[in-house]
Length: 38
Image (cartoon, rainbow, N blue to C red; front, side):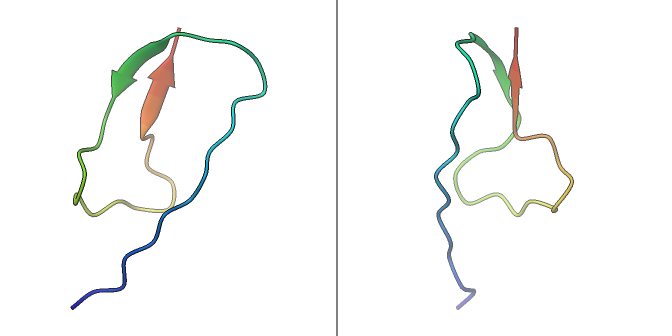
């Protein structure tokens, strides 16, 4: 089974989430945009 990791992400300022580009369990690349903000 693959290693599973969780990371805490903190925003530098208040924002509204515009889009979430990954679902739980999706493989992601190091430079992939996971969340977009307005």
